[in-house]
Image (cartoon, rainbow, N blue to C red; front, side, top):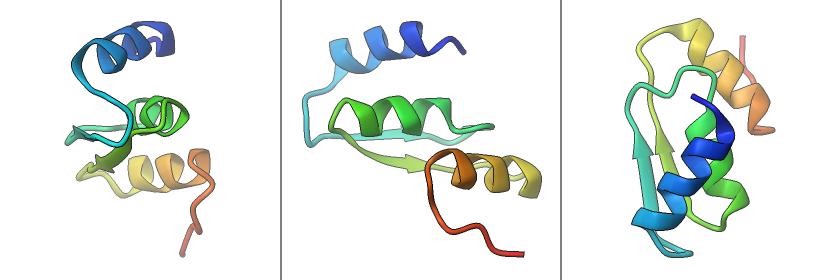
Length: 64
């Protein structure tokens, strides 16, 4: 998902401080955009590697 597209979607459908959720977040593009735009976020994925990549992208501690 291109960040520019997700930025338009997040801006159009939420306000700063709202929660944005992506339950198939893969590499974390949606949470990264939400964070940048001042939204809180929830990101989930079933694949351990996707979670590791998303956590690293978001600057969160990567375990294991």
